[in-house]
Figure (tube, rainbow, N blue to C red):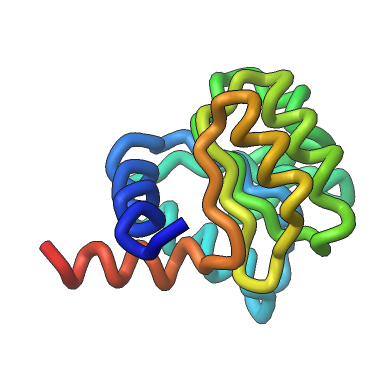
Length: 139
């Protein structure tokens, strides 16, 4: 896929999907997931932490799985190892998410294809925070 199509998809996601489940969100400020989720919150997005190891992250209830979130999720942002992504994609499809975003370094072609085949938009191996900052600078 060419860069123009990828950038167009990223812009569409940033502009249209406000309810974001962050899978693997840590309560450790030194972790990338913490910084990205904090940036999302500061910029008006609604964040739903998904991490069974915590009751709350960033003062928000943390859910053990995507299926436990009581609201509609538009975007699933994934901070997990590449080989752990496929079950998350399956859950994203089950809950009716519109898009999945695999963070920088998270690459799973099989999972991406499964999401695309189910009609989800897919971003892979990109940092949400970096892409958001790039998008804002372009306005």
